Image 1 (cartoon, rainbow, N blue to C red):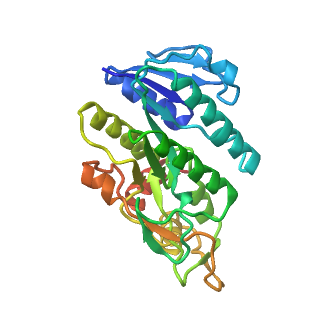
Image 2 (image 1 turned 180 degrees about the horizontal axis):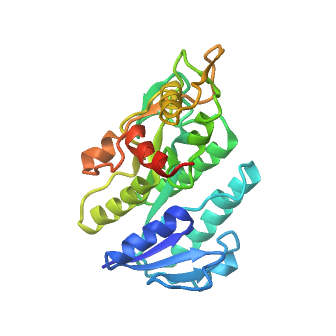
Length: 283
């Protein structure tokens, strides 16, 4: 069994921690504010990674380190704080180990700046236009250059219980771009956890891994199609047609073929399978 550190224990990080401990792994969760009552087998290390001194006592004997930290805000300063200062502090501390851990960095498909509905994969050009995505991309490049063993996992739009933005949108009869199609890419949060566990198991089995994986479901469907279907399922008015000149900052279709070729099987392979389950409990 492996000794694993999860930096950032939000919703996905906690689900990951619980899944890994259930499999017998020794998991430490690094959080600024650990739960006051610990009722599971997860160890906690209290620290803010943006403050280097708070990491001075962090153990160094981890085999795998997951970086699943979200900025406090959707602005340049918050992203720099996490993806520059915070990541640098963590790297500096872990570099003192005689046997450095394999770092699995949770990234985003926002690093792709393609805007014409192109298919993208791990080999596609990654030059986003906005500064927050640029900072994520720079963090990716830093980790990939640091060690060929480090892995980047690019999640597309995450949905699931508590992440019901499209359901709320569909219920409001929004105006949506219909032509040319604006594609949506998504992954259910259970598949986020599934992918991260899968990569851990591949590592422990000695399977050779690539440095980057796109994690998105099989069906990058047009937003018009998704919202129209959701509205029909909820007996809401259909969306209106948004007049557009076809220009947009990001519009791409994400391919998950590298991850599937490795052997991962998605629990929710398309939006209908995932949202049908959510609609059961949605009010």
